[in-house]
Image 1 (tube, rainbow, N blue to C red):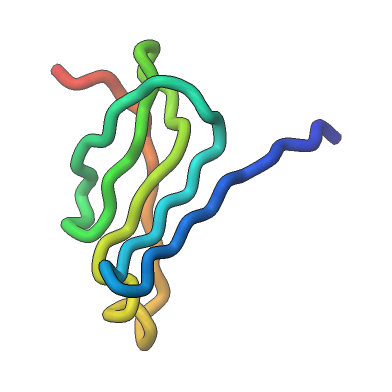
Image 2 (cartoon, rainbow, N blue to C red):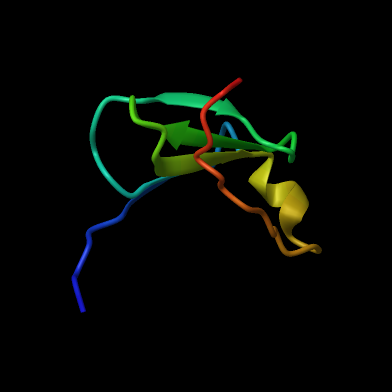
Length: 72
């Protein structure tokens, strides 16, 4: 099995979580969940995600699909 390093940042003051699978250039864009942004690279692959208002998720698990699809 291939090992991969994952970078995780949490800013308690901003209530913001960021998870990066691959450290490279990319940009964040909206998902179907208003609290979640996916980070994609120039080829449309998901390289991370961010979650706003993390503390509001304490009673409900976060479930989402990161598609990495290209914008139409």
